[in-house]
Image (cartoon, rainbow, N blue to C red; front, side):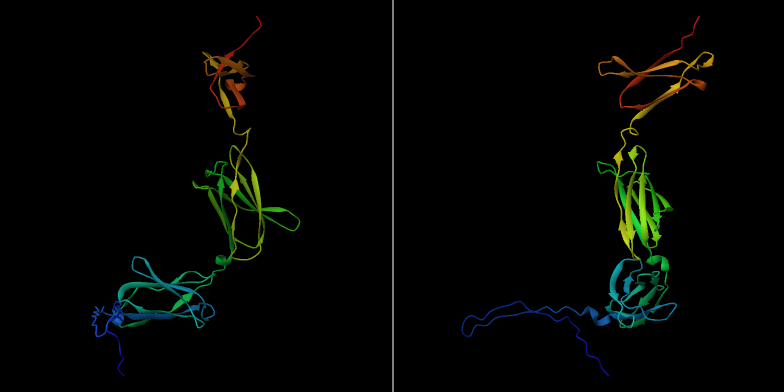
Length: 289
């Protein structure tokens, strides 16, 4: 049986009007060849590997040899999909995605002119893909990301007892994540050097939940202060019990004493909770003659 096909796309002329009696108008039209004359068809069914049943509503995407996405469709009630009309080409690949399943794909294939290719896809269930995850960003008060923050995830039972489930560290963008989580009540604890610790509670009640938990870290006035330390020695070595005075260097160059301590073993001294500024130390040791 012969199949009729238009060799041109249906064309349409511009609009013109006959305004007077007996007027003649001219309507030219340039026909464009129908690109679908040589196109083929790609079709198939997506099924569950374990049950063999069709997957309804799965997303099926076709890509080029360089993995450029070309088109996508949704499987019907019988798990079937179809790309038609589709241009002939080489090294096409079809992918199928459905919640709770690994990404299914075909091997590369070619589509010839007017050819119909059937490509079935078998999807493998992966329960971990149905699990939930928690992700977020950690910033300072100015909105800048904090790198290397420690983020701890604890689950909370009915007795309000906490169980450590995981530890993450923020990347250079201040981002962290916890994956493959079961429904439960959780508490996320944030800590970072020079910042006050912070916590957030989050309840995951269903599978496939995506919870975003951000944290703005507040600078700790005590932790944000610096320290001054060193070793006091003489020509014979470390001086133990030496007096060490810490001076702040003022803008005019004058010195203001702000703290005093004594050296211990190995001549070590330490000043803590030191505000920002310029400092020097002076040291000596007094003996009773």
